[in-house]
Amino acid sequence: MSSSVAEQLLRELHASLTQRKRPEDVARLIQELHAARGTTLDVATGAALAAAAEHSLSNLWHGYTSMLEDFARPVGAQRQLARATSLFASVSELPVSAGDDPDQIEAVIRRAGEEIGRAYGQNHFAADRLNRAARTAAGLGEMSKRQYNKRFRLLRRMEAKLARLIHQHHCREVTMTGKGALAHTLSYELFAADADSAAFIAYLTARGYMRSVFTNGRQRQVYDEVAEALFNRLRAAPERACWYAVAHAYPTTEVLARVSDQDLTRLLVRWNQVLRQVADLLEGIWNRRPLERNTMIVRRGDDSTTWNQAAQSWNTARAHWLALLEELGQYEILDRFCPGKVPRLMAADVVGWHSMSGGEDGSGDGLHPDTHVWAELPLPWKVLRGEEECPRSLVEAVCLRHRVDPVARAWTGPRPTAKAVAFRRTPELVHGVAVADPLLASVLRSAGVYSGKGMRAAAQE
Image 1 (cartoon, rainbow, N blue to C red):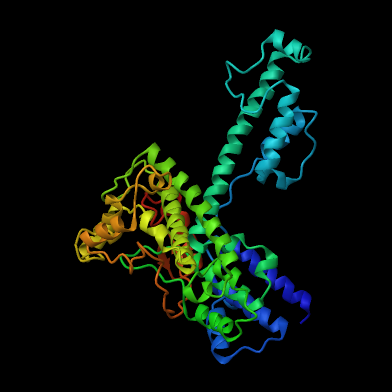
Image 2: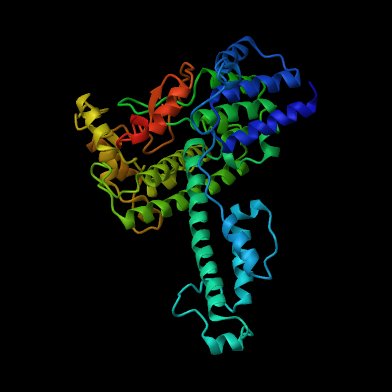
């Protein structure tokens, strides 16, 4: 195969960092990449990739998965931009992609607002509209009140749409960060600097993007024997590997030791920014409706989806931040500043299921052991702003009181390096419940099975 085919496959792997492809399909792309490059794989890597790729969609008779292969994307403002084009002379025809770009949408709102004497942010329908005299003074004397109001209302709605779009883009970014760290931010040039590094990052990220399963046990571990085989190729030729790129997704001591202090500092700064952005999101949810902090059991009206996405992103960012601090030897920071982890909201039935099985810590209350520690520590966003202190000594004392190991549970240090688990194929999930057949999964999802709501009438007939 030619080098152009190899580059195309690398670009597909890079694109997968912002998608939700099954790990089996990423393994198949990696196989094809090595074939295109004429790479001779060692026996262990070849066997591991073959075992995973055997279940890729291209190797299955139906070639179909019932699950979306992308993260939910915000609905753009294409319709509003098309309407603005017809109403405002200064707004020219725009490509479809402009409806997904907040900067272009804002530029249109500002440019169109100048036509009717409206400044950006003037949205009050009573106070900010121009009366007849003001419209005449602004050169709009020939425009009827009805036509003026139509344009004013459109720009008002477009600003509201823009705010929602920015929020949804942020939530999508938060979700990817929680599951795949900073892999989705890698440029193609950095990602493709070394093919073996790219293969490891793409596969590990696909594993991280897998959906949670409805269970009373632990979720599936990300690092499996396929990832281990791919990582061993980096160990075998460390001088070729792009360790800085790998550190975006896999910040173990072994990886970070091969990254320069300058690049480690760059990563530390980025994770500091993520922590502050996610803290703002968590605080916003908390202020709208404080959660049941002692149990973290979801109640009607709680925004559990956004909270859980933000909590996972916070914990991922915090784990990477701690790993970088340790590698840079900045232990004294944690002595003064050690914000805690944030638990996810749990459904009452799942907590009850855990309780029946004794719970993870043997307490029998069904709560995650970290919940009790979280409930006693200062809220993380207050710690970041310096409103409350949370030194390492406080975290250790609270952990000790609740019989939680602060090191093993990553309260005062980075996550322990995981050992590889056996590869298992990706299940078809319907609301977290595994279903053997993807076609059956589509039918069950359409019928509303496992949704917690009544089955749809059409499906019952």
